[in-house]
Length: 495
Image (cartoon, rainbow, N blue to C red):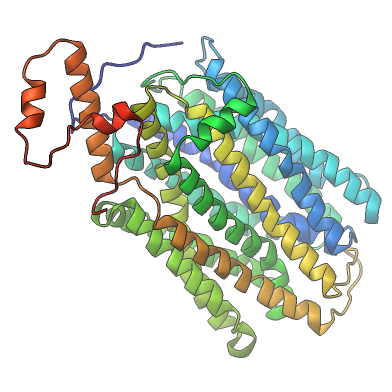
């Protein structure tokens, strides 16, 4: 199912996506949210406190399979860009992920009765296969949103549906998975099977629900991975967005991996893992309209600065939780959750803008290229948070244990659980604030790019008066289409 590239639409014209497709697309985020949440929250703790894997080895196991994403995600993006089938370019790959990911995920937590190094090796192999299966689904799924519409604000509106399902999935999986897992091996096996079934239903529903998704234009595949990296380097907006997103995902990954240790050893309340997580994800459902309004009022860049600042303040304040207690800790995490909600909505919406901007500047559609590289880096740095925390715990003397053991941790390891899980995320989120200030795309930028596309289309059709109209403008002295044709980046509003 391949459609020709559309004729450039008039500037300011709204392009809408049918509600049924929005819902069908949105339900797919149940998979992405659940997969990002459950391993990030439980995998490190599962290995150190159930399988008796040393902390530094467990951190490596959680991270190393994600390095494979740097290869498999761009490859899947490239192949899905080239795919021609009756299911369209993206949905065959999503279907492949749907039939493989649930199995590999369940096996990761439902393995044989192993502990120590043998258990670490088993989890490594299963998690490697799981990362591969997830790439088959995630990369084409995220590329889809860019191809449904070229409208700047319509993309945010489309992603509202995604955020509804994403928020619900994070809420339910983050609270339900720890409750199912408990502290025993049998609980983790049950959790793996249940979450695997959830992934299967979500992915199949998304493949079916996006059957009638509009296709604004086919993406173009780069001939090699090297060419994909070269394409990414050619887009300054993409590089800036990638850097700020990586900083934010590292912060979120460290915070999430540290939550069970923070609850168990700092608050002395293992059950608080669930309530802390609810404080992080609860604002996703409540504050979406607020972040949508802020992104329109102060543009996406301004809203992103605010969200990162809230995340930074909340995580930094968590470092005092040992003095002020459980209630204070939950209040801090609630502030973190409001900022995290902004991350989730704005990052992906800004990625779609980057892809559309690149198309306008270069004349090429490279959604799969950018999405593949972006998701690869995102998942790698998210897992890097678990690696850093695991190594920090190992260096400070954390004692691993099996499910049947109860061991006392040294004060140094408890301090690492507190400060590593709070100040490291705060520092990374603070870096993302500085990077966001350098992000060049705004609503005004996209309007200028859109106007340039219309002007070029009129020139190609031989329309009269375009040149005179550009010269008789408001005295700015610039032709609307110069930036796009020259290949230079448009200046942000107010620059």
